[in-house]
Length: 555
Image 1 (tube, rainbow, N blue to C red):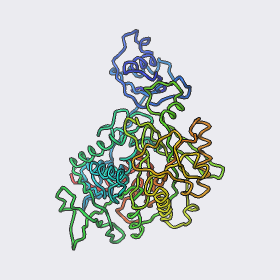
Image 2 (cartoon, rainbow, N blue to C red; image 1 turned 90 degrees about the vertical axis):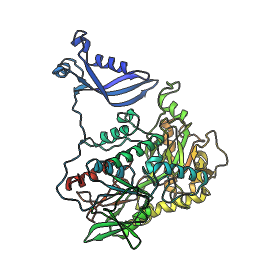
Image 3 (cartoon, rainbow, N blue to C red; image 1 turned 60 degrees about the horizontal axis):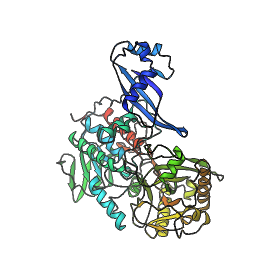
């Protein structure tokens, strides 16, 4: 196959326009005197180039497959286009199975992206994994979360953070990642989302997103496929303890397995009222908010480290403003809702950057604990709400936590979330940017009305942070206003608190991806090895590979 890069097309174009552009770029009419050989094409990558507003283009990388031997080399040699090259598509392949017999089924703790993709790999290869999830299945989870947003009573096990699909299920479903993987795992993850219900563009857009509405269907479809391949799910079931013998995992203790719909008598034993699931291979994919589980793992002497992360606020603007800034006034309305990515090093040394930007979305109450409040952003697949929001976060470390204790970052999060709950009177605290600068509670909004999931309360967000964090945020919003005129407007809305950007700990693992307790595989965001849906999914695949390479499957 051939690969063509830098293929530019106007905002409005069709598949036939792409084909005409291929013919032109490869000079096929000239090379074959109008008798063009048969070919097909696939889109490798698509992005938007808005650098020279008002002239805006879609830019493609395209693979072209001719259906005749020798044509590719002939075209490559004679087309005289430096953007054309030979293309060898990398397709991800699961490693060959090992030769050690399994005593028990592999056990996966958590059904977020890391857990689901680990389960996908293991189930398709015949390892019959058991997946336990403290939260509900996605349909029941949506009901619980909607009830929380309406009434404010949080369910500690089924909420925006916990439940089938993980925290990403109530987000924008962004799948972009900085992970570079030559084995093709990244593309495999994108293609898998498309296979189970995401729109085709997810497999090739430079900034792919699924949307929370579509992601729920994808998660359900993945679950059913895993079940059909021999995997088994137990929802509303939390791991509460570990059984360790000779520095190796032997079983986990759970609080409930009555939700299991399958006969697991070969893998589960009930003894004196204690629910014990025996397994020599336990993938711990618990997510970044499982604080009770972090405490338990720490008590069980898993090797853990304090990890730096970031905290901050969400900022909300009219989506029309962001579109005009990014595309120019009078831009083509068929363009998708615009996004942005911003970073600044403040004069006090703090790094401030945008994170999890949600075009056309909501600011959501993402709390998972009583009397603690945090926020996140969420968009549906169409990204068609009136406002855009993004986290603006500041790096924090032990100097902010006030301790070198392994769990100090987690305690720091808890204190901030308690303060956010207090100043918001149990609701999402919100403030105009001008009032944040003036250090006073907002009394009225200045042209931007909040779009939230969950009730909000006007407040003074300066009360949340130390001066060095507040100063860094104020200075950086002003700097961002230089490059994005209007970003620092007085009426821009700030919401608190964005505290769950990543895990506050890292569970140490060796070259085989096991912890210091043999057979335990820390995995994904909660273990400190991922920073989003795609990177967590890739980490789940990597961990599953270690089990595949070592053991025979049950098939």
